[in-house]
Image (cartoon, rainbow, N blue to C red; front, side, top):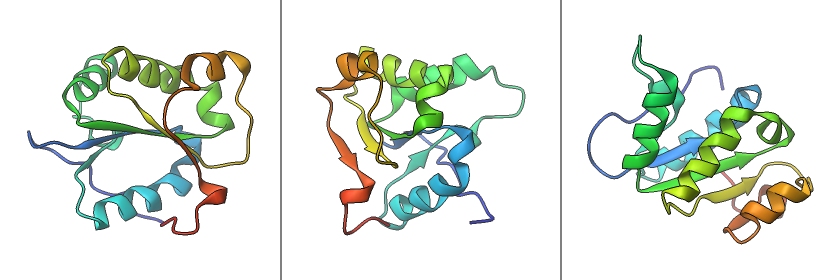
Length: 128
C-alpha cells in the first residue's frame, strides 16, 4: 500500500493502533481493513505537526476506546511500542495483541501480557 490510511481526528470512540514503523507496509492495509469495517482508527500518522510524541501518544491512549497491537520482532524491539502496550494496560484498556508473524515473544513479554486477548494472523482465515 503506497498511501497511508487517514488517522481519525475527533472525540468519538476510536481504536488506537500500536505498531513498529518497520512494519508500516504490512500494517497500513490492516488499518485500512479496520476502517473499511466502519471503525474509527487513530495511529501515530495522526500526530499534529510540532506536537510532543510522549504527550500526544499518552493522550490518545487515554481517550481511545480500545487498543490493537500488531506484534512482530520489530515491535518487541521497539521501546516506544512496549511503552504503548504497557501504558494501555496501566489504563485498563486491555490491549488486543495481533501477532503478524509466527513468533514466540520473550518470557518477560509473555509474563506481562500473556493473559491479554491475542490473535495469530497466520491462523486467521478472514484476515483483511
